[in-house]
Length: 275
Image (cartoon, rainbow, N blue to C red; front, top):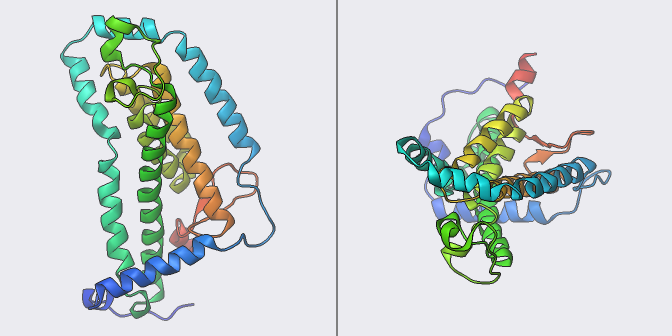
């Protein structure tokens, strides 16, 4: 049992030498990520991921067949409500998540973890690791989905009247040929996966809400249903795989036997202690 700690001043957490501690923390994190797996080897890819990928691919294929009908309906019934939904769909913009995560990462990375008590140090470590994961995965999936878009070159719904719903022009770099998969939905899928890992008991409502928010890109006439579903699944699966990769090295997460989602280290500590 740890001895009680007195009040901690901000100067103890963030003393002078910001840049030096920041670089020291980043270097330490880099070494942890590169280290080999610890303990009995457990696969990063699981049967659950294979099932999720298969079911997702089937869903995207089925939705692809109704893309034209859905977008024709949406474009024929635009009004103030759909305009509001289009505005709300900007919840999928990556900067809403990148900026806060970066600020928390920098603040915790520059803190002097050695100068505080065990409880506060544990919280700082958790905040640091999870903020780094949020920033890294939102940024990575955002870049990756834009690369994937190049291979399809699907015309956006803005060109529905000219090309229809099934016009593809691969490797054409324009914002008008980047419909599949949806970047906004990818970001929401990434954030949804992180929230599922943080709050595993509520994975189903988180997934439903995330998919519903992703679907707002349809009335916004920015994406087709198959674009949205593919983007959401892309962000979801890549994030789960990344978390399992780090869990195998005990960096920020730990694998849970028989579970698809790894557990975030540091979450629920006080609840378990109280029990």
